[in-house]
Length: 530
Image 1 (cartoon, one colour):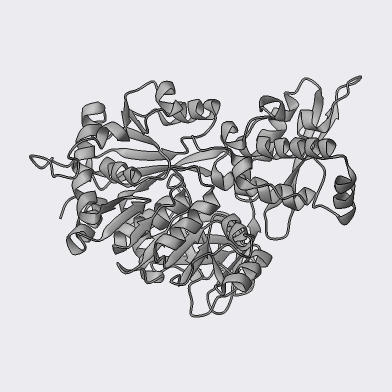
Image 2 (image 1 turned 90 degrees about the vertical axis):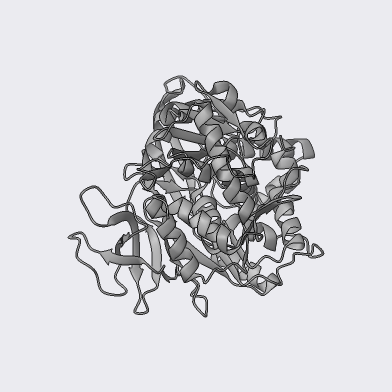
């Protein structure tokens, strides 16, 4: 055994299931034997590029088999790793690079981040070129601290300011073990991952859980320009998927597909929703169409996965019971545990949890209650962030941006709760004396869910005027998602050009449908793949 629990996990699975498929995307795949052999080769490439033991490596990769190789190679090299969305706008990429200060950036050929990085860049195309799956000529000596800090991820803190959370290798292996034991995930399972691997839900709950158990990880293939939903449908048709872990918006989109669209879910035993609250109406529609319940999960960057609803029968309205190896308490203001049914702050402890400084547990800032059966119901947050449907917004930051507008004297931002779908972000501004402005100019939107009258009003407009109104509304929502102003966006460009990924595009589509009663086709909304 090595000093690295992560590498031990990879090696143990490769020895037990060498020819089993570890990860597959379209026509490309790696067996566990090939994955284990590729990792040290990639680690050598990292070291040769400028990442010695202890260095920080930034992964700017979309979902692809090479992500798994590069990810585990950082552990082999004794480096820390941080994964980010490679398709963010330039200003966001610049900020993430400045915050991360990586020794090496790993990305794909042609990605913008390569031109922005002020450090050596290793492309997976170059690193994977050649006999990468052959073991290195001589075993590398792993750093003594290979079991130390490994994954860095951003978590919104109690004030809404992003915090950099460092998770040890032991945290990640413990979480993977908790997940696989609780959900009974084995090498016979096929796990479909339609969420980005740079996101905790994809990286921790899908990739690590698959490697821990020997399951096959299926990544939907969008190389031909398919929408995210179409790619999922194609993956389901091609692979006998047994576990589907996704965000609520995907389950809504699948349930909303035309009735004559075949969706193969015959082998699926668990549909799990994470990253945001699952709307009960979405769960009902999905189950009515496909005969499968969608179960809720709950976790955070610091705590990892906390609760999964995987009991014999679903428990709608709850996030289920704590994972094995995880302890959950609901406490009052004094920190003392509260009895079942009483709402308080959710506190988590266990080997997968990054504890608060000077403590043996983590206070999540979330509010909830435990029932007599140990099932957790999450009712909200005690902190200031506003969740607009998977995208957490700090209202202080939005107010600061609005106040910088030359026409604005003062601004206030709040969230209006929407049933099961986070909150609608609303901004009110006071204009400077003698000025006039349209709402789109300052992101002031005080419209809630669409009413029947609003639908009729829109339907009665001339086609060009109706299109313009929908376009302006979409621009507002897109600006919120990418963290900019509508004036900074090109109204004629697709959402992808503004840095909107496929999951955010699904959220935009749902928001416009909810607020204006208009359904936008995902492919035309997102635009062609780059």
